[in-house]
Structures are given as structure tokens and as C-alpha cells.
Length: 273
Image (cartoon, rainbow, N blue to C red; front, side, top):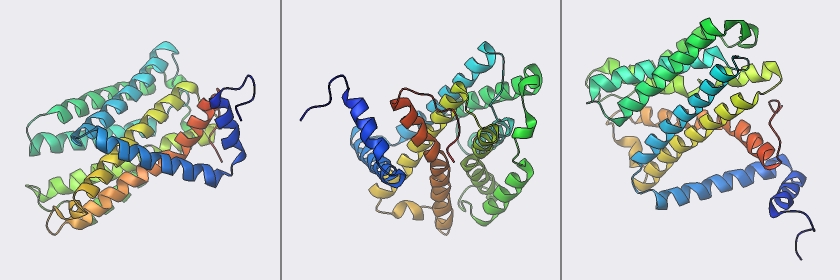
């Protein structure tokens, strides 16, 4: 039997998915993600490429914000708190990278990301501050910093040249893991998602998926020994992996509804409840 006359396979697929319970569709998305991981493993031989792709997509997402800020002349829908968290972890990671290793492509990408985020912050704070609704940006950053610092004190790499850099590096990892939370909360409070902001958050989700893919493939290829490379500090690798999963799953729900809306030819107009 073929498809109904006038309906494309995509529309048939969308109709079938819409009839399934949410849990079934989430399971299908997980299976699709696992299939993508397997495909990536065989297509991309150098796992270092995952880091580069992840950081490049992050920068691309920021460029989407630039378009919104400079073209539409408004920062409505954009969380200043998320941008400040991103600037914070990028500063810490960049400082650790410069001190502990020679400048490389990661240094260039981190510096590019940092300068881009700082420009976004400047635009929100000064040029477009009249369109920024502070009351919707409700997550208190001081609590985030304290929580990440405590976790970094408990779990961090032990074999770095100086213990303080192990603490700072892990602090940046944990800060990055929850940096998108203020943006998601902002959109929930606003009860709407602006198109450009939605594209930006989706880019972040794709970036985090590639970062998680790198972890999973490394763990698989080393048969789990990836967790024990830092003698006495394996707890750090476990918490680092959990942090990577946390930031991926934080964005997974949003990305699921974003893709679903896109396949239906619509825009995701509000955060799912």
C-alpha cells in the first residue's frame, strides 16, 4: 500500500509520530541518537574532531544571536544570565588551557567563543538593555557558582601540574553543564520562544550531543579504562561524564520538540510543559 494521494512520506511519518505516546517517541529519539553515535564512530576516525565540531557549532549558534541583535535590534528572549555563565566558564577554561598547554586550535575556538559571548553581553547590557526583561531571568547566579565550586572541590583531576588548575578546570566543566538552564527558564517564564532564540538553543543542543558522543565513543573504545587514566582521580572522570550527560539531557527535551515542530512546518512557539 502506498501513501495517501497528495501526502509526502515526511507528512505520513509526522502523522504516525503524532499518534504515538510521548514516551514512545522519546524512545525512538534515543534509538536514533544511538544509531547516529554508531554511524559517527565509523565515519569519523579521529574523535578529536568531535570537540572541534562541538565548539564550531557553539560559535555558529552565537552568530545566530548576532543576527538577531544587530538586525532586529532587540535582545528579547535572550537570557543574560546564560551568556554570563558561558563567559565565566570560557574564561576559566581558556586560562587553564594557556597555562597547562601550548596554544592550539582549542585555544583559538575558545577565544573566539569568549569574544563573541562578551559582545552579546555588551549588547544586552548597554545597547539593547531596554528590550531585556530582567524579571524573566530568574535564576540566581551566585547559587550556581557556589554549587559548581563545591562540586569542583570534591571532584577534580589530580594529576595536573598544580592542584588549583584541576579545581578550576572541573569548575568550568560543571558551570558549562548547567549554563543553559537560565535560558530555558527565561523562555518558560516568557511563555514564548522567539524564532532566532530557538535556533540558538537548538545549536547548543547539537553542540552538546557531539560532546557527549565523544565521551561515549572514548569510553567504548577504551573498554571503560577512560575513567581511570588519572590515577586516584577516576571519580573526576565519572562526574565529568555525568556533567556532559546532564547538559545534553537538559537540552534534549527542547530539541525533541524543536525538531517535531520543524518537521510539521511550524515554529516552536513555547516551552513544552
